Length: 128
Image (cartoon, rainbow, N blue to C red; front, side):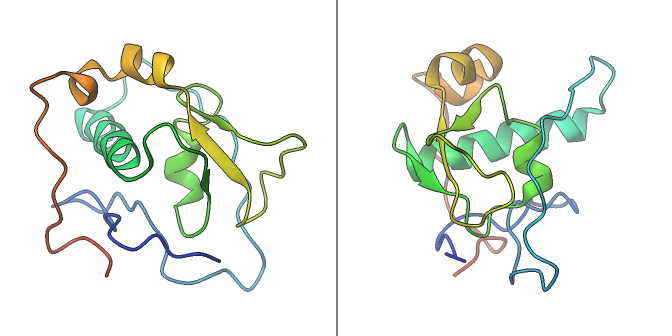
C-alpha cells in the first residue's frame, strides 16, 4: 500500500480521518458510493470540502493510487467527484487508480476551485 506523503491525516480539530496508518489484515475496505443528503451536519460537509481540497492540491487532474486514503472518506465523493481511472476497477484494492472529475468537483465544491481559494498547507495533522 502506497502512503501518500504530505497528505493530511484528518480534518483539523475533528475525528474525520483522511488517511489510514497501515493496511488492514482483512484486506482493503471496499469503496462504495455513499449518498450525501441535504441534512448532513456542517462538519461532515466541511470534511468533504477539505478532503477534496487536499486531493486537488496533491493530485490535480492526474490519476492517483488509492493507497492509504481512507475508504470511508473516498466513498463520500466516489462516483461523483472522484471516479475510477481504470477499467476494470477494483473498489477493494489499495492499488486501484482513481481520478478527480474536475467539472463535477468544481460544481460541488466551488470554494476549492475559486481563484482566491486559500492554498492547502501542511499542519500538525499531516502525515510525514
